[in-house]
Amino acid sequence: MGSVLAKCRRRRCRPSSATTAAAASRDGDPIHGHRHALCSSPLGSADVPSHHLFLEFSFLSQRGYYPDSPNRENQDALCIKTQLQGNPNLHLFAVFDGHGQFGAQCAAFARDRLVEHLSGDTRLLDDPVESFNSALLAANSELHGSKIDDSMSGTTAIAVLVGGDSLFIANVGDSRAVAGVLNEHRIVAENLSCDQTPFRKDEYERVRQCGARVLSVDQVEGKKDPAIQSWGDEENNEGDPPRLWVQHGMYPGTAFTRSIGDSTAESIGVIAVPEVMTVKITPYHLFFVVASDGVFEFLSSQTVVDMVSRYGDPRDACSAIAAESYKIWLEHEDRTDDITIIVVLIVPFADVVAIKEAGYTRIKASRMVSHEAKTESSAFPVSETCQPKRGSFLELHSCPSSDFPLERNLACVAPSPTHSLWKCDLS
Image (cartoon, rainbow, N blue to C red; front, side):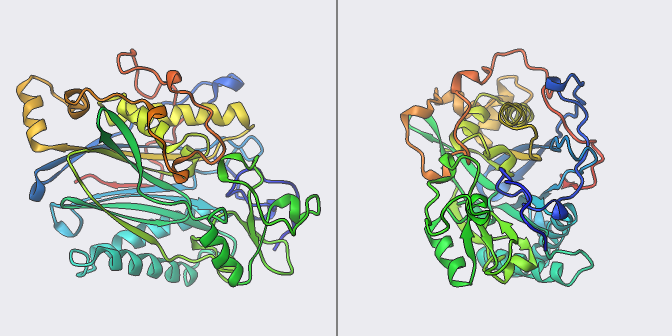
């Protein structure tokens, strides 16, 4: 299955070059003297008439920069499906982060199967938690039986279903969803998912009981004592996280404990069972973000919420977050991960009417303005799962203010608008 050839600093990066796909050339990078190719994110909207809500959303998917694999494709996939099952109150937003040689195919497969299963599940309205469980487990089983080789490839999945006045969040892996919630006069990050990695004690114990060895690359290579089963936390582990290995081999080396696909890792406890959370939408829920860990590797959930709060247009928020993520990646690595983000604003009908009456043609974060909200990340502690995976390298003052003369996407390296993995139904 391949041996460890070199330490792989990224948590999802494969330790063996034999299991690494060729990567898609980026269209430009200012650090290396190339020009950025620009791609404007689309703007979409959807009503939730049962509870008088209006959603306005955008997305951006940016392929990573891999200097040693200039033809690597973007392995992320996303899906926005409004009016799921023809129901005006059901809207799905999902991101899939593929990995391994056939990661892109795995991500696209999981995306398509999730939408198909949820669209045809008559239990969805009555029991969305069970529907998510059934759909993701079925997608995993079908991927195993497909023509795609998922022995050392797979995908994470993070999905948010807006159902009336509730959010149903299903997570498999270490992508993330987070909400921006007004708390007194500040907008704070409310984590909607919990990264599934060996850093979590419950996940560590579960995979160990399934026969996994949990070791960092240095431990596998004999540079550190394998008996020391402590790696700090995700924020301070210096890029060598605990990984999962079979008992008598140097594979598969996954740094997550749940995924879709990864049939080899499944034998040591990597499962496709989602963790599903239900959150009631309150007047204080201003927006939510769904993103791959290309965003959260260096940016905390609170930092991402702070950045979204500075923009009334979700397109600008997507562009700013993707650009900052890409920039910080290249400040600390010689490569970047694929970066995919969906930003969804939640606005009551009453605020939409007020905005129109005031002469605005677009949502301008009216609730943030009307509540005179301030985004002071230091004032409210956030949970461990809201932290960046490798420390916080972005100070709040480095975020451009809302009155900054922004030209949309000028700092973004984005794939072609016809990228095959973008599958959005905005109808």
